[in-house]
Length: 180
Image (tube, rainbow, N blue to C red; front, side):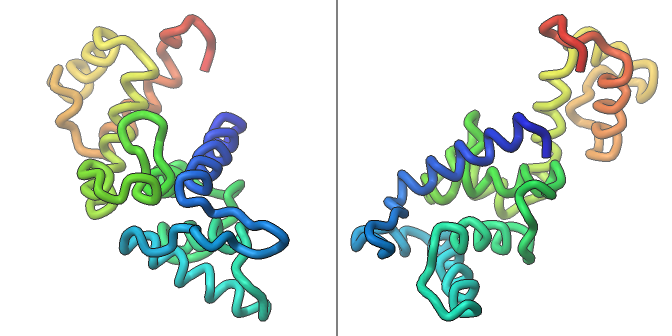
């Protein structure tokens, strides 16, 4: 995880805690903390309680945070060790500051639910966003015409999109004039 991702991780976690009133006063969770707003909330709380039970104590913020990791990936992973695809998956729960508000913030958001239910589509959309952020449309099209014989690069399979992104990051000038 790079510094920008780390910063985003903490911003999104803070937003989830605020939205759900996940705060503690005098070592106790406030009475109006949101626990059952959705199946996602319930799953995270169930996992957090299991983590707390291992240490024979009540749920604390870190239990909830790590429960989000377990819910998203099936196992606990330190946030500093997240892969890009794991981070993208977690941002479906926490929100990505663009088009996904986060299922723990807006459980009824259709695009977030589609992304959660279809990780392959979410991964492809993430690659497309990264490619668009990395280079101009003309440069992208010039590569895809040469390599794949098409200007319709967004229709490429995820493996090809990943190859395209790697090629761009290795060859293209950044859109803002700064090196990658």
